[in-house]
Image (cartoon, rainbow, N blue to C red):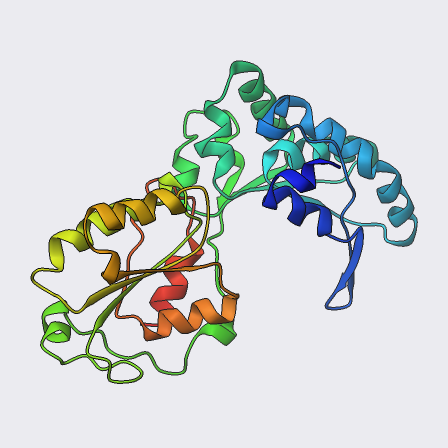
Length: 282
């Protein structure tokens, strides 16, 4: 308080329970001090460690764990390093993107802190070869293994419809779901600049005169939504763009199944799961 009153993201954080049980496993969400704007990021893992050290000591008496696995190097991996020293257990850090695409390029003390954490890790996992290659010149490079992201089997249909060309779709050869006579293009992401949704809208504006039945459906929300809605109006394609906001995961998969084309020209991505989810839906 009062941060949850000021921003939806912080309000969502405040609603997370201190403890939950997921598929029979106890999951804890200890609170720690994080300063908005990633200020003092270089020491954020120390504050995280202080918040859960007592909890981990209690858990360790009942569950003598074998490995510490941190998803993100800062702050989680930094807290993991302190646990490693205390319990003498191996530390694995998974990098999903931000550590190598953003944090490594911040000010020197943040960069030094990140590198120190990764040097202390026993193994590092990246979710794509692209991420691994971003740190080819670092001395911890030899500890990296690539394990790509995957998707849940339940979202993979038994049979995938054979894709047709846009030309076939425009001539009525494409019938997906109800016979709606439109070519549906889908975009799914957080609405921020790096996702390139503005490029998709600009591309749509150049295509609608040739393919007037094009419809772009944008799933997701974020800081760029107003700008994207304004762009659609300025390019006079607002009738061809529908902003759906955030949707439950099952509803997103349903949108993918109904779409002919998935488009997300993201230019800063570790490994976008939405791409393989869309491919699984044909």
